[in-house]
Image (tube, helix red, strand yellow):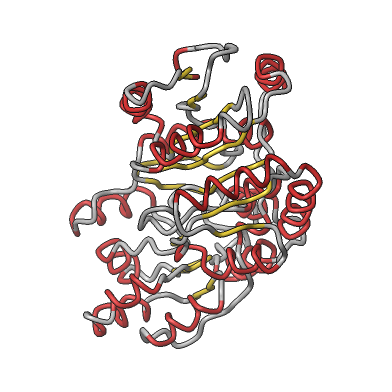
Length: 365
């Protein structure tokens, strides 16, 4: 959403933007990354009285929902006040679609309150229409237009100096069970690849302590970034249990397994790794990004695996084939930088919904 926010603020309308999230982690990131004229607040709990108080205080001129964040009371309260509403980069998975089919009148009522519905892919657009949406636009996926994640060059130089020429790979955005899977891959491959370093970055860094204990119980030597542990010659696992450094780890490693794909999470955003030229690997669960993953596979930029054993085989193949993984990484980068134009199209549609005050300028937000 950050490029879209930048585009809105830089427009001739120059609105202020209030960004709401529901977690401490996202709040910290917003404090660090939001531009001038944009502020962060926690979203109110979805109770009519609290939603009413929130809207009474902020008096928004336009409400924008992202992906699948349906908060019924906030939607109804905003609609009742005549605030134009938009759902952008809408994502409706097959699982959530089947869930909403159990309450067709409820979801149809909610969707009818949006003045603008923009889906991130054809499958989501089709599901929205089947759920009762009258008109759904398909401008593309905002994630396709995002800029590459940044990193601290000094930190990257430090990691590279500590790792030297050791073979390494990354398991990113991992969930419970996937860290052990990555450890099993390491144990299966370290004899064939002396000095192998496995980098694990959990989706939720707060789990770092428990992950380290689990992996050490397997007999592995683990260094934790959160406590400043260096990468030593005997370090087998480097645990990236910090916040906001994903760009650092994707820049450090050129092979990236995308987490949330060996369980039922449904996968995570592959564009971040692709923009930093990583060869991509993912497990069988990818319903959150079904069309996206398919496009990366078609472009020979991603390999899908069905099990931990297949993951070990694939990582081994990529470690051994420098030219092959470079071709995959370049294919991933090319796909990620093609650009969908979704950000510009979405910004224009949103600005058209923003009411004008009597002086011809946005009222306040």
